[in-house]
Length: 381
Ligand code: BGC
Image 1 (cartoon, rainbow, N blue to C red):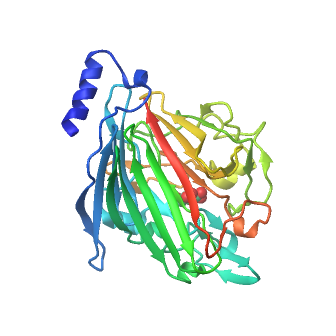
Image 2: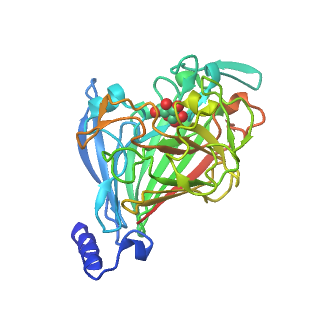
Image 3: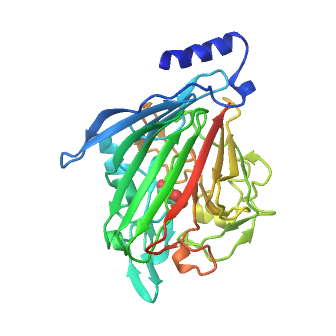
C-alpha cells in the first residue's frame, strides 16, 4: 500500500500532474491501523500509538489523550510532512503539553471561575487557569487513557476511542460515556465524530486541539498562512479570556476573516482584544449556526507548499488560537523549539463559558439525549 501510494505520487509528478491539479489528496485504499508501543506512564500503564493511512494522509494517534501525535499530508509536489505540533515521547506529553493534538473534554475552552448552575444546582469545577476552568480542568480528556479499537469500513479506515468519565470527575455531574471516531477517508479527509450520553443533566463541549502548521511542524511561524472564516461575529472576552456575552461584529476589526487574509496581517494591531489574548484567542460565531450536517466554515492555506486545510463542522463556533503562549520552552519531534506563532488551532466547538451565558447556544446534555457533533478536515495541495 505504502509502495503503491508513493508510486502514484512519483508517477503523477513525472507526468507533470500535481496534487493541486487533482484537487484532492492521492486516492489509494487504506489499510488496517497498526498499533505499536509509544511509552509508559509513571504507574506503568502502556501507551500505544496507532498509525493509519488513507488517500495520502498519515495519522498517528496515542491512547493517551486521543492525541494526534503526527499528521502527514503531501505538498503540491507530493512531499509529505507532519503538519501538527507534538512531541516524540510520552514524558513530554504528560509533563508539559499545551494540549498538543489532544481530545478536549468535558468542556472545550473556559468556564468562568469554574462554576455554573444547572437546574438550580451549583457546581464547582476543577480550576486550572487562574480562577477559571480550562479544557475540562486539571485532568481533562487530554490526560486520560482512551480505549482504542481500529476499524476498516469500505474504503475508510479509522479508530473508535472510548472513555467513560465518572459522575463528579473534575466537578462535572453525571457519568459521561464518550465515543470519538477518527476516520481517514479514501480521499485523505480526517473526520471526527463525537458522541456522548449521560445519566444526569450535565454540560458537554468536546473538541480537538491540533496545532496546525501546514509548512511543517518545525518550519517557523504561521503568519504567512492564508485564512478565511465564514463568520460575521465573534465573542469578545475580558482580561481572563471569558466572553463578555456580546456577539460583536467582525467588520472593521482585526477579526474579519470573511475575505481571505494572512494570519499575520492584523495580528499586531493595537486592539484591546488582541492585547487580552496576546494575539488571537477568540471564538468566532459561525454564520451557519449549528447544523445537522457538517458545513464548510474555514480554509487555511500555506502558500509556500500549497497545502490547504478546509474545515466543515456541525458546530456553531470556532476557536482560533494563534499559538500565543508557545514560548520557546518546548521541543518538537524534529528537534526544533516551538516559539510564539509557530502554529495555530482551529477548534470547532460551542462557545466558551456557555453554561453561564443564557444567550449562547446551549451545551446542556440530559439523560436520554445523545450528544453528536462532527468535524471534517479536508486536505489538498
Ligand atoms: C485556548 C487558549 C489556551 C490554549 C492552550 C486554546 O484553546 O483558547 O487560551 O492557552 O488553548 O494551549
